[in-house]
Length: 129
Image 1 (cartoon, helix red, strand yellow):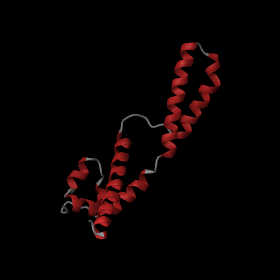
Image 2 (tube, helix red, strand yellow):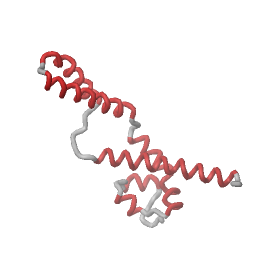
Image 3 (cartoon, one colour):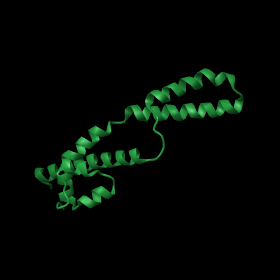
Image 4 (tube, helix red, strand yellow):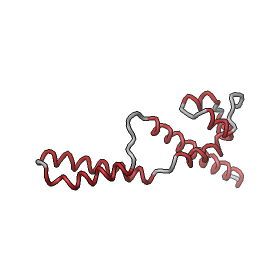
């Protein structure tokens, strides 16, 4: 049977891993190439499609319906996503301890896209490991 301390340590580890994973995934999403559409621009395009869809041929209508569905899905994701600043703050709170516990060095964080300034805020230095 696990002690309460052991259970608490496991819960802390899961919480830290969740914060680290969310931040790293946000960095990956952010670094993808291509122009970013703002939610406002997506809503405007949906309105354009809705206003002109009745004036086009069947094949164009099909393409516009698909574009509208894609934009609606992207808009839902954009509006539901957490600001990267919040994810970064959560990462900063746990990164030093997470690094220490898992033997992750400064260079590994840098290679996966975490900036030096974020690592500095988190207390992860080149000497840590």
